[in-house]
Length: 193
Image 1 (tube, rainbow, N blue to C red):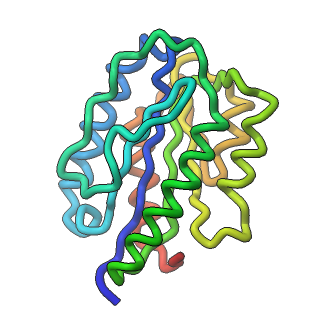
Image 2: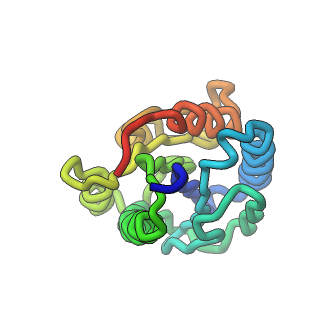
Image 3: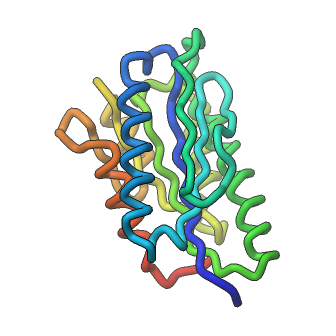
């Protein structure tokens, strides 16, 4: 088997409620990239996909090395913050990416999802089923999910999403610090999918 890869999915809420936080998220992504590049052992293994979502999700950067990361778009006019479609999209993307990596004979570590939001979903009744599918224990490629609350985040909602850990910016934890700690913690693990 070839090299080891840790797929990392950074999923950013870019809905209207996040307008005041986009600059903070962009700065966090830059700091995260810089920290990954500072550790060559981590940089060789981490592949990052950046997804933005509001009413619907979209890939801002496919799963690539950390050489570059996109700037998040200015928060749109979309008032919708639909978690369910983002979780369904992630399940499909992870499944596709893991299969592609395995075809390249790469050993794939369990993916991590870093979910950033103010935790105010506009689909409160439907998102839990999509999330349950993403984190289904029977799915070998299920990711560890780290939630990061921005601004006046709904701690209860984010606590249901963070299967591995939940961070809140209002507690003084910087986004980049939470991302770096999560990737560093996940990187050396021996479990593969």
